[in-house]
Amino acid sequence: MQKFDKLTGIAAPLDILNIDTDMIIPKQFLKTIKRSGLGKNLFDEMRFNLDGSEIDDFVLNQAPYRNAKILVAGDNFGCGSSREHAPWALLDFGVRCVISTSFADIFYNNCFKNGILPIVVSADDRDALMSDAKDKENPELAVDLINQTIQRPNGPTVSFDIDPFRKQCLLEGLDDIGLTLEKADDIDQYEARRDQEQPWL
Image 1 (cartoon, rainbow, N blue to C red):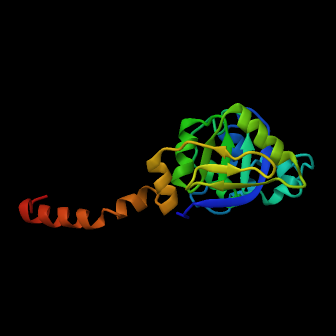
Image 2 (cartoon, rainbow, N blue to C red):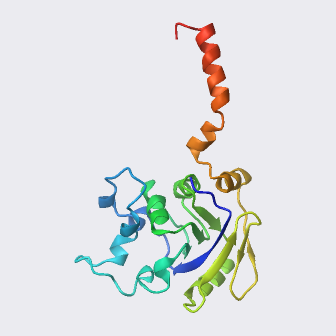
Image 3 (cartoon, rainbow, N blue to C red):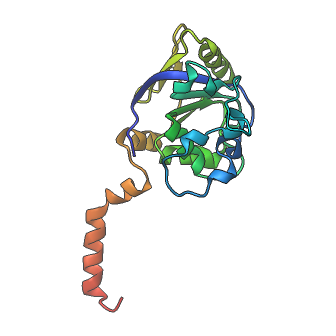
């Protein structure tokens, strides 16, 4: 998993409540178990017409937001079904951070397991960051996970809280498999001891 420490990039304003995982990546794109290739279908039904042409007024079809690395979103982001394809699609598009006042629990957990930082802020801070993102002339935010801050382009720095264990996993690029592999020596020693003590297993 890619490490996350600092991220400076364009923030796209997605001022919509209750964006669910089917909106993030519609069900017809869930046939793959690969984590790559889903970015082109991110927010598919909001980004594209039935004939495949772009919907001009959707934010990610506009400059400079086509290159967004950060989303500033409405309340309850990632609700709905528990599909892990949702963070896969965000990551494949290039989004490494989502900022909102609240997230659905499963989506929130899946973000950390895939190298995406979901940041919970107050409604006032979200509104300020949303306003920053809507400024097409300078929609860039700087996220510093180490110091737990978001630097606004023309405003006070926003601080955020995060679970220390999840923070360390992102900083070190450790998903569930990576965490297990850190214990590889202990696992090998246990298996060798078990083979000697309980050879019938």
